Image (cartoon, rainbow, N blue to C red):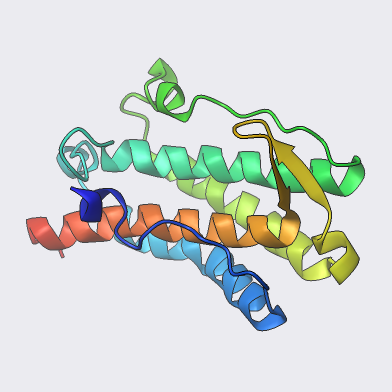
Length: 176
């Protein structure tokens, strides 16, 4: 079950985040929307409504979640760049995936949203200097201070984490 929950393991940021690692993460963020679109855009509703693991979200919920989550991340970058170590507002992601607006909603809208958010995010990230990347925000869950440099890695991991949930389901079901 752990391998189904965390197909690429959990995120542990390196003690020192090199410029090369940062560029790698930004590239992951840049290509993720197209990779996700390639995987899910031709799926039938039955496939989109299949959980990626027992008691897990459906493919549809995962796609909508990634768009919502990465939208939040983009806003967190903006807050940290314009405010002094702001306390960000978390959200109840499990409850968001169950809201009625997403029930049966085509994934196309979240794919488009993710493409727009990632275009803006990648453009922003590539414009930041080292001082800006060291700016921080506070996540109230655990009162953790997170640098923007670390948050790039967190969201590159997050995108690939959910991408692999779907990729592993596609492989197990023989949908390719």
